[in-house]
Amino acid sequence: MVKWPEYVRLQRQKKILQMRLKVPPALAQFQHVLDRNTAAQAFKLLNKYRPETKAEKKERLLQEATAVKEGKKKEDVSKKPYTVKYGLNHVVGLIENKKASLVLIPNDVEPIELVVFLPSLCKKMGIPYAIVKGKARLGTVVHKKTAAVLAVTEVRSEDKNELSKLISAVKDGYLEKHDQARRQWGGGIMGPKAQMKIIKKQKALEAATKI
Image 1: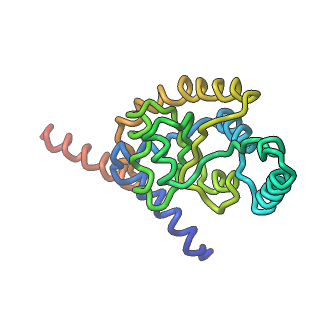
Image 2: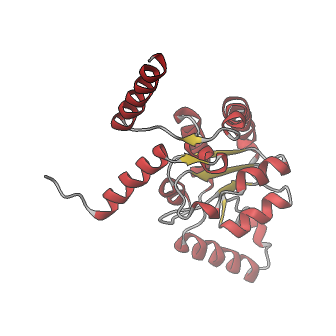
Image 3: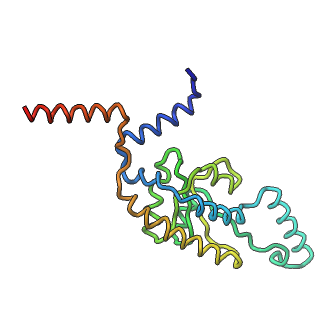
């Protein structure tokens, strides 16, 4: 018999628990993720707005400093950096001030309580959001191991059309379906042995009532 590593056992136990127990709608909604094509489209756009690395930032600041020294404006040398916003508190602030255009939330944040309120907050503020697969995938966009949430605020003029298409795809293809899923309980699926026991009990009861 193969002895799996502890983290694999925990993953399996968690998945089985989520199937067996009745999961409240607030948690069950995280099982409904954005479809693969729209997610690929979203990550393609996000990768254009990755934050600067330390080396890139150092180079930009050096160029700006030399420009100021020569009597030029720093805006002449470097354009305004447009980047994806991350960090839970920062993104919550952007949502509350209605500055976020699109919010992406991963489905596997631990503990889930950190982000469980975000879909409701986005809905209240009228900001389009989507639950995507994998916090690690979001993390790669911002040069981190994982990310609890990402938000797009501004994009360059050449990408505005792409962003509006993505937002409409999220609204039409995801949020309408997700709105129904937000009200449904999850889990409650028994294993084959338990199902057989229930069927046996029902048959026994039916037989007893006939007598």
